[in-house]
Image 1 (cartoon, rainbow, N blue to C red):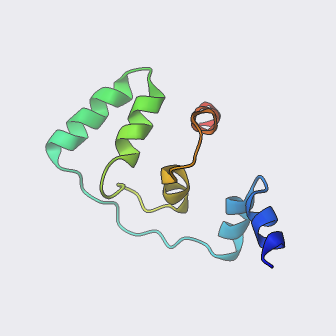
Image 2: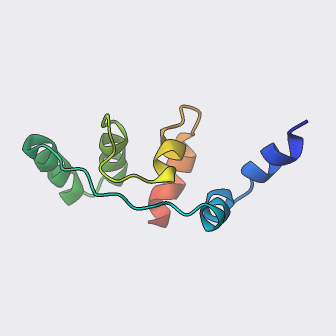
Length: 89
């Protein structure tokens, strides 16, 4: 029971398909404290995208509400998947 749902959820493009059915309603962006914003800007100016994404995902509340944030925060996500994601940006 539930096997087909799990298979579908593990297919490439699942979140994109899900967003077509259940679109995300954009909310106002969260304001960042000045010190956090400056730290993120320093990371942004470096060629280390992984450090920037890790800093963003490590924040108690991500600045932009997006379903991919929960996906990327999953503890079982591999470093390779994170690397592939960053390279696709």
